[in-house]
Image (cartoon, rainbow, N blue to C red; front, side, top):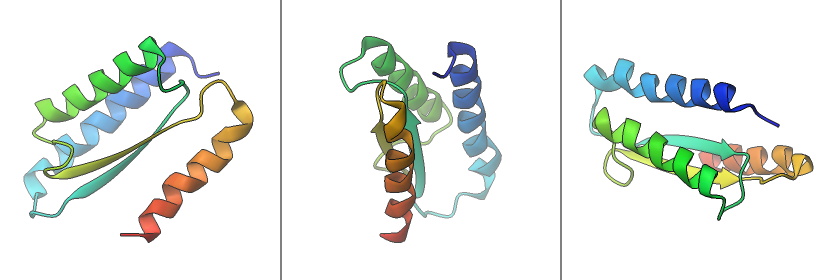
Length: 95
């Protein structure tokens, strides 16, 4: 299972990416795939998701405006990680 520190580091790194690309915005909608180890109703997972979207908003990246965020959760089922990750990758083919 992913550790809280590792997850926060992952969020921080993902949130910093738009900052580097911010000066190069060209009107296109970017796409971010997020794979979370929480169930949909898990309060901790909701808090992480909220913190992530707030960090992006702070960097002027808003879901539905200039970024599309595809959030997938696998919960505690480690066996689902691969399938859920494949689903996220497959979404890239649809755009």
